Picture 1 (cartoon, rainbow, N blue to C red):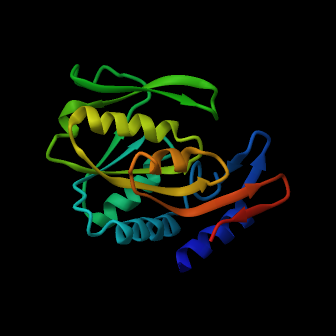
Picture 2: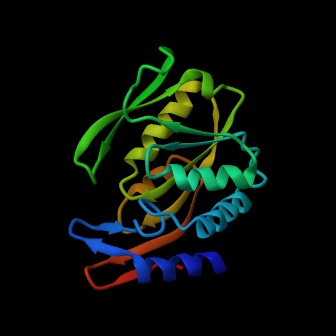
Picture 3: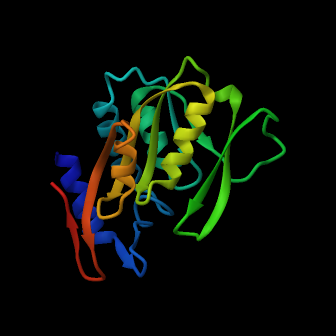
Length: 193
């Protein structure tokens, strides 16, 4: 609970709200990373899922990587990230899913080489934000294509006033968010407790 209150205070102090219900936390979570604080977030996620048999953590590039890395370091498991752009150094045997980004107003394919997720894996999906749930749905699709088990999803910041969290939870998937925003205006951010 202490970390959650610290995260909420950090969001209030350093976060910026932009039109379209966009929350910028680039000063500590995205473009610039508060590494010590991020490792505390990773430890919190590791504690939440310590008995879930997680063998790998999966996220999507780019902003989810830092949080996923911190959690993977604390859990001592590999981290895999889905690429948004296919490159020449990827295996031709890919897991692929389409994701619409409301932030960027575009649809992109996310891909992971099939060799990195196997049916023997128990995957924890980690991301920085959960709003509409599209990125998580794409990541869940990749895990299901691989035949792996989903331990759940760990999120740094959930926009609880949007339907993504409910959508994922209604699929029977455990979702743990370190901070849940109930409402957000240009002047105020209210958290759910």
